[in-house]
Amino acid sequence: MTDRPSTPLLDTIETPVALRALDAGRLAQVADELRAETISAVSTTGGHLGAGLGVVELTVALHYVFETPRDRLIWDVGHQAYPHKILT
Image (cartoon, rainbow, N blue to C red; front, side, top):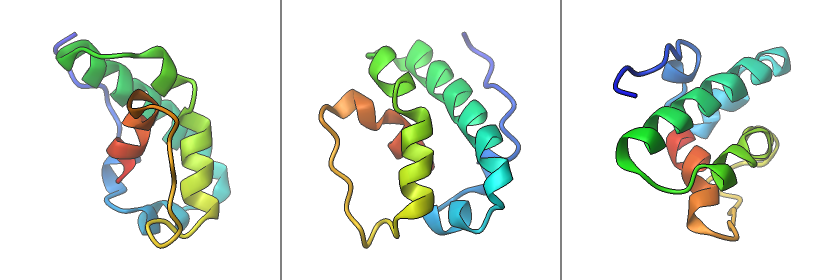
């Protein structure tokens, strides 16, 4: 896969503060775009895809509810953190 997916909402999120400023109704779109971006990135660079895809909604929810980066997140394995790295 060489073409980046269209991620218009995700592209506006440069920090977790911007994510928290969104209406909660937009979070499903953020998760969809984050999933597409994760698939695109892993298909380009290689790596573990399943673990990252399994935590997309969790990642969005954690960053929406908690005040990251003040509140710290700890991931079980590095490839679970792919969506987190994209958001931050």
